[in-house]
Length: 414
Image 1 (tube, one colour):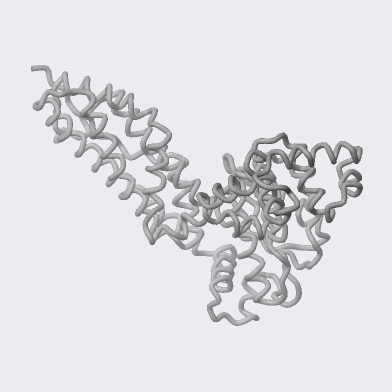
Image 2 (spheres, rainbow, N blue to C red):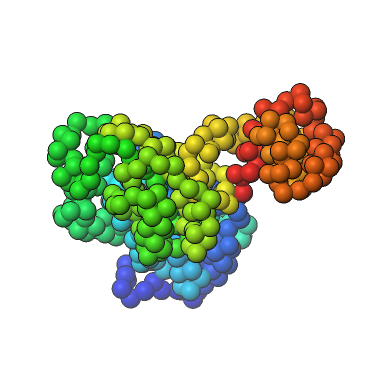
């Protein structure tokens, strides 16, 4: 029987027969294009452990882990298409390296490896399904599963070893210098840990007395530090702040604090941010002193999570604008039920009709003022309101607040 040898670099690796090698290649080709629902299971598993909660709660870190999941899967599958059954080298791509760097920056590097091991179980179950589709021959199936379990487990362990080495290198690089001191001080302040004001201000180069407005600026596509910096500068100028505290939270996110209490002009910023289409900005409420420094950032983080959860199309959101929507959308299944019960067929109406109803309620049910806000004729407003009444489960007048809240959710929902 013809045998397929493993690479010369690993002569101890088991050989597999030609028929099983052919099956392995076919299975690897199938694994290259996994079903969407299976990918979601993979991502959910990799972020499911309690230790991974800080990562799962951060949209930027969670997205990085998901990219790393798919990169690892495709690397393993591609290698087995080229050379089925051979040992797959742990070649760390930009996804794995970026994730390792980001976790070290947040002080979360000790949990960085959890996602690899939880993902391994999901990948193995999916691979077994593929194997059982490929053959019913017991001998071939046994050989295929034997080499598969060795291949997957070895690839994961080799990858973990490589990532661990990279984490150590990143830690050594990041634990020295001004940036490391700044990150450490911010972490202590956000956790409410005891740290002297003078010491914190010295490490931050930023005064903690007076007002603070926190923001998170992040990139939803490939990390582009220049764009993030440009967006941060745009935000600072719009608020009239003379300086800002900037913490590099990850390769795709900046944490900002501006020493101002003036409201952020979201309309103006939305126009200026169109130059950076993949950049998003979440802004917290203004606060005073150390408590305000902390609370404003937590507001911005809650706003960021909501924008990510709803895949909102808006580039900028202030906590004051989305506080109600954030509360209403914390549980997606309940949100869908609320929208269906409250809006009925109005959910699927044209955007002009939905916007007219929302503006009408905001203008205290004045069709005249709503027409002025919408730059349209009062009769047009009345026609749209009549259409909305026909689509709602009950008349608008009977549930003004509920309909307005539901429409506000739809406005932020992508």
